[in-house]
View 1 (tube, helix red, strand yellow):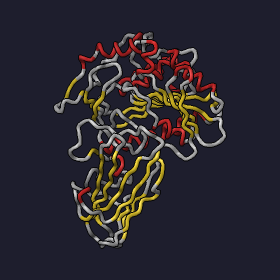
View 2 (cartoon, helix red, strand yellow; view 1 turned 90 degrees about the horizontal axis):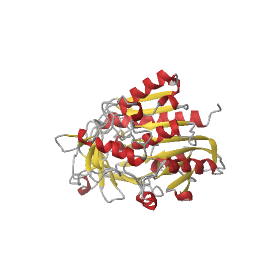
View 3 (tube, helix red, strand yellow; view 1 turned 90 degrees about the vertical axis):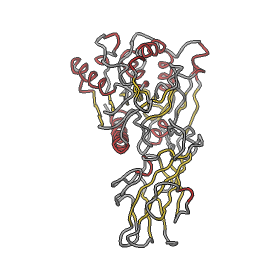
View 4 (cartoon, one colour; view 1 turned 135 degrees about the horizontal axis):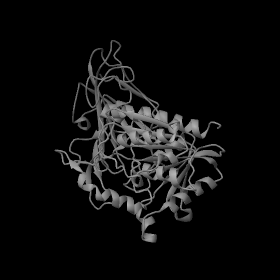
Amino acid sequence: MDAVKLSVRPSRGLVDEKFVILVQNAPPGVQLTVHAFHRCEDGHSWEAFAHYVSDASGSVDVSKDVSLGGTYSGLEPMGLLWSLRPVPGSQRGLRMRKMKVQTPMEVTISVQRGHGTQGFLDQVALASQAVERWYIAPGVRRIPVTTDGLSATLFLPSGPGPFPAILDLWGGGGQLVEYRAALLASHGFASLALDYLNSKITTETGKMADNTYFETTFRVLQQHPQVLADRIAILGLSFGCTITLRMAAYSPVVKPRCVVCISGSHVQPVDGTLEDIFAFYAQHNNKMEFNEENETIMRNILLPITADPALKVDMGRVHCPVLLVVGQDDQNWCACESALDMKEMMERAGNSHLLTVLSYPDAGHLIEPPYSPHTRSSSFRSVGSRQKITALWGGQCAAHALAQEDSWKKTLAFLRENLYAAH
């Protein structure tokens, strides 16, 4: 089988863009394994593989043919990406995240003889091809923002602008995480990734960021000459939803055109600071459970949802379109229960027409851009805690991948409708 050919098209593209993997010139009816390998920026290695049988012409088309086994099975054109997992022998608790968006995620796709399950790197591949997956499109500008004490990065789409904008808030792990904002800018939105839990922010004042910090961020975004000031959305994941909802409901300054909340909750002491919120969560830490693998199940921390109105954002005060994205197997947060409660609150207030809920069976907490590898659990330490845990995020691999792909498509459509369309 020396003449086997492998092609991946496109070999360079955005991470949410599909590719086609085609094996040709193999003998008809032979067993082949298609393998993907990626070495992260942190030095850890990830792989995925799938078993195929060549057709009568000696070909395998991953976008049309069924995988008979491996890290995924069935007809899954992008399975070699979303089923990536740490190679055997890796340390426990890994999560794949792109921290340098100026460089691509490099994946080597190869084809091997037979239906193998291990030792791929020790074998000679029949053919291989390197693939580049980018979070940032050509022409997108990356601009660090330190104005008024902010710790943020602004991504501007190519073209003259001005553009609708998105304030991108990640969760309780802190850090300045840029890859989602870079990808949003690649789809035509000015996007600001904000770090609001970094030690550089807290040590200057001795306290965590307060409402003023978020209001300042919103003003800075509004005043940028490449941003349409009245067309700004907020997108939050996990703890980022907590901030998103409280700002949308109570801030006299932050008036988003729409909001997107992924795997989050409205339960919090709404009159409190970030420190108060973390202290509130810490009071409920005794509700955490552990499974047989000593993975921490945090979803019971806020269950049952308290009936005290002072511990829930009043969703009747939210007057912009809201998109909630939740996984029904979220083991980290009470997102499903919060979504139901928020829906009931908005129905009572008469603004339920503003709410859209996307709820996905067997999806977990970490609903990321499409084709991101599913991480069921990983090492995690919240900024508000000194304890490092192995957090159980939940989700079943194939179902979670489906949720990521579908929710991303619908999130982009929601943002375009509310930020680009005339109202």
